[in-house]
Length: 88
Image 1 (cartoon, rainbow, N blue to C red):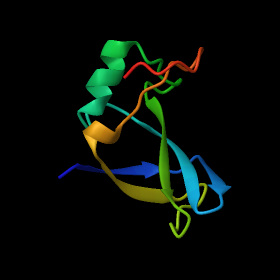
Image 2: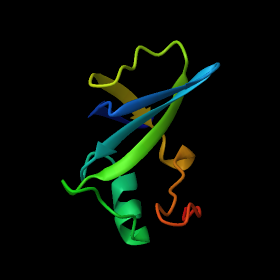
Image 3: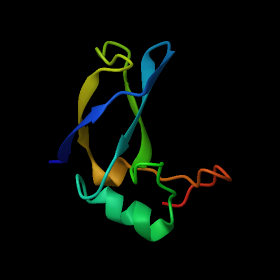
């Protein structure tokens, strides 16, 4: 039901039963990118939107590798990078 995206893994933070996978996406891989642009979420030096996904610790995510994710737009939370405040 969600959009499938493939992204390069920039960092993996392991936290017990889950991991946080850091990556970045460029428009228009999924509709949430439009929401991020409208909310003024800053882009990285390559014009991509930095993202973090919470995944099961059994994930094979590895820094420098690729990960395929299903993005459920209703489960996406956007935060202001400067203040940490949730914007959506």
